[in-house]
Length: 386
Image 1 (cartoon, rainbow, N blue to C red):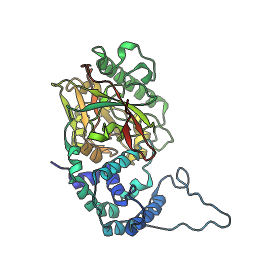
Image 2 (cartoon, rainbow, N blue to C red):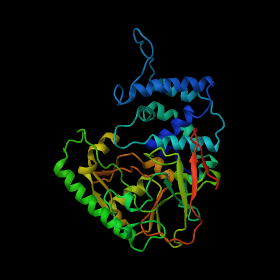
Image 3 (cartoon, helix red, strand yellow):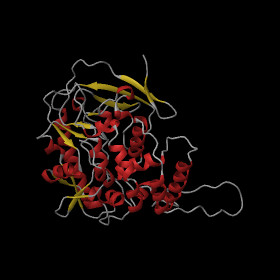
Image 4 (tube, rainbow, N blue to C red):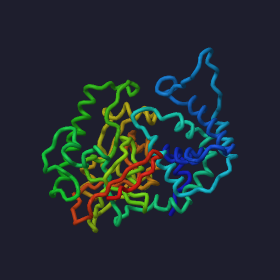
């Protein structure tokens, strides 16, 4: 079953995907309709950007009076999108646009001008035909499929600690707490218990020390994922390699990474997060209040003032062995303020598309050695031959 167009356009990341496909940032210049759209979108996004004049500023060269910049409105951009001849869409262009949508996610400040522009009623309506084309493309079929148990890989950027290692913790951990494939039994359980204790303590500290006004200039923890020290995996896409190489929010920009094949237990119970409803169901069943520690960041990114919760992952681990976020679930859910219906809300933040968090220890089963990958100047990843 494919993705629903309305579901994609309901999510900030889904709209950004369609926006990137429309303006074709990876396409060559020289197509008049595309060039006009890019120019109009640039000026409209600049005008709408909450950081205009501060985090986003225009630089001019030369002397003398600074000319007034061109003006463009969402209605102008929508007309250009509606009139845009849609070129053949290849799988590389689709993956590029998805990577751009992931790269531009930010939950610690207001959305950028392009996200604001894509969310305006006029542009959102104009993007419908782009969304319909994307969700029916053969290269998007895996976006709605469950975890690929036959192809799961960890990705460790060069210079990073292996997820679960002592160096990956803010506080040094004893070696027995390493939660990576092949680690001693029980590491994931201890890490989850420690995560819950730290989250509860951090929430209490935030309630004592941070301002109650969500508009205050304050930032802290903004993610809603399980502890990142757990084993995290994604599938591989043939020659493109593990998707975790390209689809990573708030990535550090490393140009080299190591990937390792993981062989999860065949009988592992995996919860699929494939829609906003799946995320909300999890939050309702296992809510953990994080209002004081998340209110400032999540207000800025969603514009919503409410009581906030995220799933208590230590409780979730008593029901399932892993949680997988489909690409469709990511596009329709990430970055939205989703009401639980009882005066509380939640948001999915910091979770990469197709990423599976393993809430149990993943055994080492004599898997092949790690592979090295590197990225060239155009952003293309390739395997490093030994």
